Image 1 (cartoon, rainbow, N blue to C red):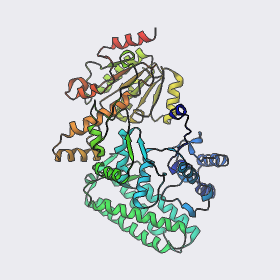
Image 2: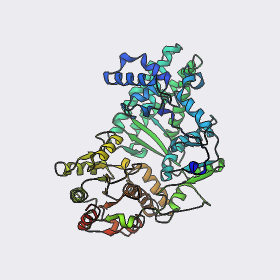
Image 3: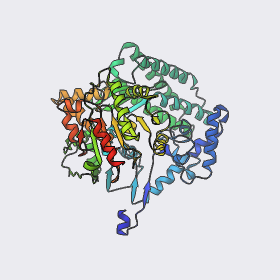
Image 4: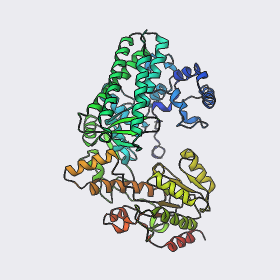
Length: 549
């Protein structure tokens, strides 16, 4: 819009991470193994092969019939670990390389936060760069920046990475024939990985701090795992000179070996060690206690104009929580109010007599509020939950009683659910955090947002727990200094789903009584849009009646 107004031609390029682009080389590898895949995957590969002959970008989002989260894409896209770079026989056709060349010629390059930090990591490690030289960086949705930065300032080792490395070693050995026998050590590593999976899974928790599993049996397993990875590295070191693929496998093994050593030894007190447990895999993760110092160093080393923008950076009018978290000092702060007429077009409903969220009757009371509010709004509502467990309880309670089409996160891909929500005009969608932000539904299709609880992070989460302890040790108040500001920002994101244009109107419902009964509740209320507040369901009915006569 600015370029058109000024009459200045601007070359804008969207650049994605490599996992978004088809890899000709790995597609060819799969074509040689069609007998080893199931019927459904075989059809997916056939669809991809057909599309590969016509696409000019290789962007996998062009293929509508296969979910972007499908496992088949992992087999036909490359990673930083397994990409052969300039030595790849298909390098001249490489979609990633073509996309990066286009970006080099652009005036403006649009990337996500992950790709930006990947570029910084490569520069820091001396391995070149992904993005062209630039003078200005603008982070939209900057409230997510600390979380993304922590991924790149930390590291992880996953059982999936280990399995993938083993598979690539065996495939490389078949082609390049180093005469090294990898099968025995890979078999032992796979067995140890399964034993670790079982021991981690016994806790029944998804996220575990290292201290929760730290005992002699677990440490012995990790030690054996470490020793086998050392043995694998020695074998790959002997094989690396034979061919490029084995050489890349050796580099990957060295990197995993180094990360595992750091994780097990735990010498860096600034890194929080924790485990992410899935049903069939696990990750050993190290997350920085604070990203502020690391990010401050990044800014000092890269003399750019740094701009951070989001609708949810401030708690009230205070930016200090964000600035402290990112290590920002001597910054220029600006806040602009929304152009929307919230006072006339919105209403905040805080139901009276709701039980405490920890009360066993809360799910029932929440369900009754959803029924009353959606009856007044004729459906057209998002119900946003802070946990899957509460969402499932309410879903069960609503079944057979709602009177409107009910869409539930997990029943279909996110975009499909949104498309159904918009097309059915009176649906009620139940979702957790993935629907709290990045969802834009304009118009009457979404006229009500119902939020179950104030979105405090779980104090049992290992990263949150460590940060709260650190805050307390430094003389702060963990609840007021960390938990409340983070919860306010998350709540503002959920609230932001409601009014998306000048013509929109709607009701925001917050069912957590703590927003009015606790002293900190005023911080949440002060951060909400300037809409009238009521505790009466009749006011909700009157509101919709006023707009829909």
